[in-house]
Image 1 (cartoon, rainbow, N blue to C red):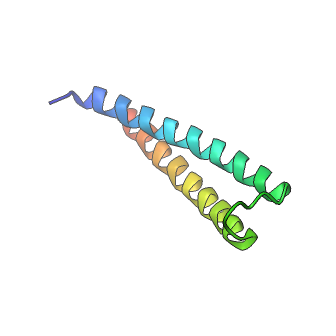
Image 2 (spheres, rainbow, N blue to C red):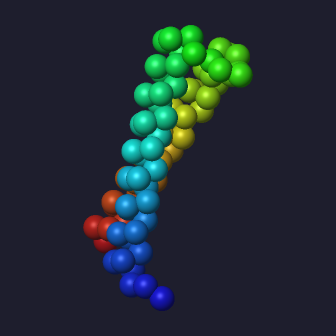
Length: 73
């Protein structure tokens, strides 16, 4: 087993990594929409992906906030 401190550090690292990847995904989706680069999916589907990614980013930011608060305890 790992210590609580190490567990908190690992959770924080994972959350921040996920946020970083979601930001990259958002950038790519926004660029694809701007350039009308939909590939095999429709623009509507691409816009749904963008919306879903924004929501997921919001959720992971909240998770990160909770992790950071628990680290202070």
